[in-house]
Amino acid sequence: MKTLWSLEETIVAFYVYCKIPFKDSNKTHPLVVKFANLIGRSPSALNMKIGNLGRLDPDLKKKGVTGLAHGAKLEEEVWKQFYKDPELFVFESEKLIAKLTSKNIEDSADIEIANLPQGAEREVVVKQRINQSFFRSAVMSAYNFRCCISGIGNPELLEACHIVDWKQDAVNRTNPKNGLCMNPFFHKAYDKLLISITPNLTIEISDEIIDNTSEPSFKDYLCRINGRHIIMPDKFQPQKEFIEIHHNQFKLRTL
Image (cartoon, rainbow, N blue to C red):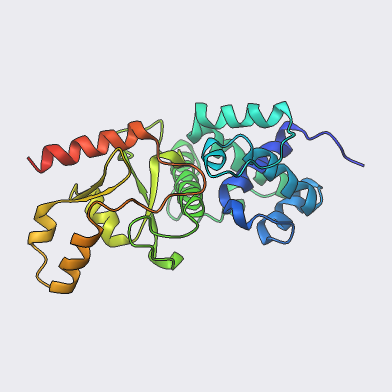
């Protein structure tokens, strides 16, 4: 019977931890079952490992969710590796999963790229697609598939929004703490600095967007949510430094 977890198994467990809402993790969850079979562990064992990883998440601790009290040093090592270089960690995780499934990374990650020959350029595009997909999944699952402003809960109407634009911060493009779950309207407005989130995590809507809204009930809605606290994620709470960068840019635009 397998007892000690390897580094590779722990990396896979962390990958699953990022992909599903913590409250939904259980031994019957399809992703738990799928990846448990992949690493030769029982779904119960993988779910327990996800609980152990939860004990390291400060955002879960703030909510009174501590995961399982006992964990291994490898869990802490994997956690540190992820935050040291999220882009590299995610790509290497996908390479590991491809190896375990005996597939090439494009098939394993379900990525289709046409008209690009094999080589360095293709690998760059594959890495970008993989990291974008991971970022979206990690952010949306952290927010339990709800827009942090409107509360809309239809996954097909949700997007993962970078707090600091990916062009400005290459290191944190894949870091879910640099993400907010939003519907497309608020995502676009956020990117255009028409709305922002304050360091106190409240919604701030510019006078420009309110003044240019002619439909009375929607204008009233925007006024009512202005100053309201965002819906918080269970894990990967937005990092204050990122929030401050965007909010300072928003304030400069509205001067």
